[in-house]
Image 1 (cartoon, rainbow, N blue to C red):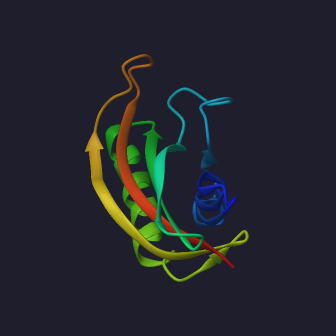
Image 2: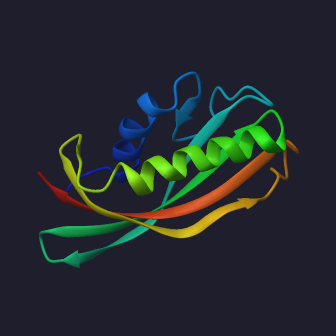
Length: 126
């Protein structure tokens, strides 16, 4: 399969997080702004030619601790409650599994408030 799991996550999350930067990097990030960064950690084939499990990390930045946590919890709820079973950009999301819930880990470089969390997306071609 040639499905980009980061693009699936971005396509799904952007309309659900209006007014928030949702991207695959910190390019263009406004310090102390609201930004959700999606990063591919890795993946593996679960069912030959049919199903891949992709691990994604999410970094939720906010102007303060409460704002960063609220962004993380909103994205988390959308991923776990709305994404499974949907077709997104040429992929079908069979399931979403939480690997790590939101954890308070400030950005060591910018010292910004940040919550990190991880989910696995099970994808197959539509």
